[in-house]
Each structure stands twice: as structure tokens, then as C-alpha cells.
Length: 117
Image (cartoon, rainbow, N blue to C red; front, top):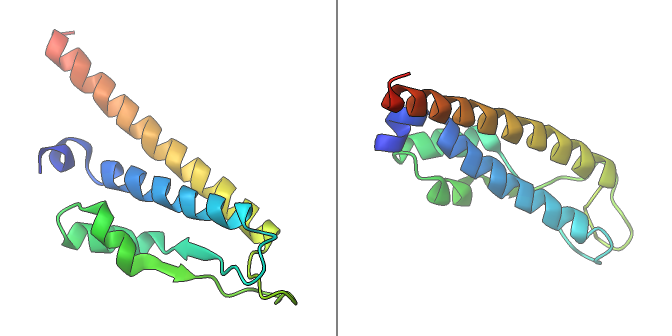
């Protein structure tokens, strides 16, 4: 795949980080929903699956999404713990930004090379 040669794993990583961000945001949005089960993406497992499948992030998600085990259970059956979700969200946002910065730098380098600078 041409994008994998140009951008390495960062293109796939960016897609996976984006999907993880949506899962965590969904958990936060459902923090008060009775019996809601928090889910998360095992990023390293998803990245390994994507590499085995030739960089396909879509199919890698299916095998890497799992329900989160709560530290302390709630009475209404909801497994969302806001401190855990906020920490995961911040950590994922930082990793997303790092991958995005790498890709922006790589695109800038390619643009300068094409212009002959």
C-alpha cells in the first residue's frame, strides 16, 4: 500500500486513535446510563491486527474492542468510571496529536521535495 510506504504505521495509528477517541467519548456520554458497559480499544492489539491485515484499521477494531472491567462497581450496573475515562481520553489525545504531528512533518517534507526546495 502506497500510504504505508510513505507514512509508515502513523496513518493506521491515527485511524485507530480516532476510533478509540470515539469509544471513550461514548463512555463519557453514557456515564449516567444505567447498565451501560464501558468499552475500550486495546491499541497495541489493534495495531498488530492492522499490520497483519495489510494496514486495514476497520477490521482490526473488531478484534481489539473489549468491555472495560471497573475498579469499583456501581449499583446501577454502569461500568463507566469518569477518572479512568478522562485519563484514557487525555492519554489518547496526546498520542493522536503526536501521530498527527509526525504525518504533518512527513507531508511537509514530501511537499518540499516535490517543489525542489
